[in-house]
Length: 314
Image (tube, helix red, strand yellow):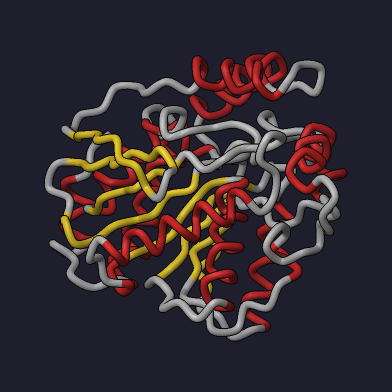
């Protein structure tokens, strides 16, 4: 059951997002508003950030104190392929670095409509290969992302597999947008429930990214892909979000193709509630689950997840 704090917050989100994400304003203005809205909150741990050029893509290292230098998550931010950045997700990624005890490389992949598909997939694929060139071992790398970044995580894994690359240890998908055809039943049943996203807005953003391509292309909508041979995948989704069925159907397809899947629906939660980890207890619970999954799937863990749980603060 959601905490009282979470119930209050969802009403605040509803009012703020209605002014932030709108098809009545340009993607450029929505980007600017998102940059101002998603600002880091208080954190009781130290971390550092460093800008880096990743094959021409402006990116940022997010490293919490004590993070294992050999372990890295390539993080792909959300934003419907039209907005979002390392800056908008700085609060979330710093906490993920802290809880998981690993470095995060957050890339500012090219955005639509100026850069539609395949720009994001190309940038994410290049970033993974750049990490390998820097000496990071595949079994110490995880690819993760939220919303569009969660779908992009799956598309990148499919692309890497199909091109013969050695795959990373695992993938982490937070409320993934896996079907840009937007055909899940929850687009109708939960459209008035999710305080963060609307089905109409998603469909309009999908047009900007897909443009003249086939939305059923697995590198655009990974739900329609073949997942055989992919590494273990963690999926977290809220029970009250418009993209719930993207995750439900994605888990089903992954299991059909023999992939190791960890899947959890967080009751009463909305789209990417993990962004509110400073004030939402359920978000901390999600981060701890991610830490446990990562600890179990990659090598060279600096300490056990149980120790990490006892030390982690937000």
